[in-house]
Length: 408
Image 1 (tube, rainbow, N blue to C red):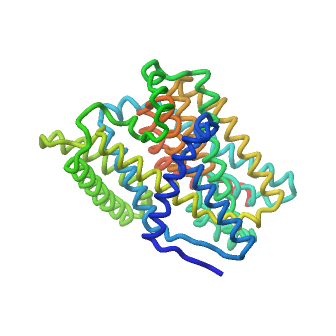
Image 2: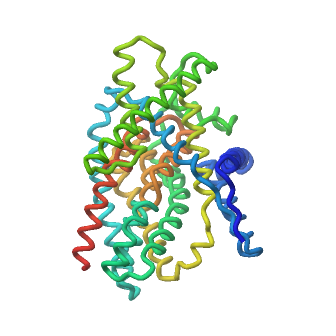
């Protein structure tokens, strides 16, 4: 028996799940100590409960996630509105370094998957499916490449293997970032002002993580909130135009990256042409961004149909376990060192853990959970989505094709 919960109801359920995650953080100290994102804690709990309902009663509960992708666009448009040219220039070299480290990791991830599949007597292409196709690539890449693996290379159940690996990877990535940051921050503690904010975080565990991106300024009013929503909507409209233009030229770019670029364009043009109150680094934008990301991640995790993972055999689970250890070790031993061994690098490593086996929103949530406790890391929030959302998608496709040619 199946029950499909509509879009409006799913949105409200996600709000309740996010609120439950904040309360769980207040009551259970280990969640705060290991910087587990609030919507991850409650979202996984809901998915586990729905999994139990499925196994015990045969009832399959699904959610309409139409609102979820819109919230993701809001979040990334907000990042763009906070990014002025000076910030982008200062992030130039770290961005290139993180990109290079990520490209190396994509190759390492695929070599790990292929090697493990070969050792376990599986088709090496199955290892590639359990590599960057489903992990760095996520569900979208797995679903896009799966039919090709099945039709052209004879890999049975390729789509199912890729989708299940992506789901399992998403869970692991959501749990990985916080422990990585906890280990690294002991080596590179945050600057003194950030340590001072630690007491405030402990006193108020319901504080908005994205509030760290706001600068001191006027309080939120209905007018400022409406103005913020207006410019976010303008960013989304411009992002749609960018997306349509690129699609017309035969170039594909994720819509949320187009929304990010649109916000960057607007925040570096409009305030210089017209003297108007601008939402960049405002408390209103921080609250909207935090709510959008939190509800998005809550919807993503509460809708995980964990019973679909029952098809993962022992060998495939072993491959994914090794991939988890590789991602964890690479963040600690490589990414942290090349990114400067400081607090910003530690936050970036938490984000790297999020997208190395999951997705960009998971990476952003991981970093938000860390900065909620230890203090802001503005450069990390700008650099990582550009790498994971834009450059990696393009590079990953090229690497996957090279591996297919090699293995074929």
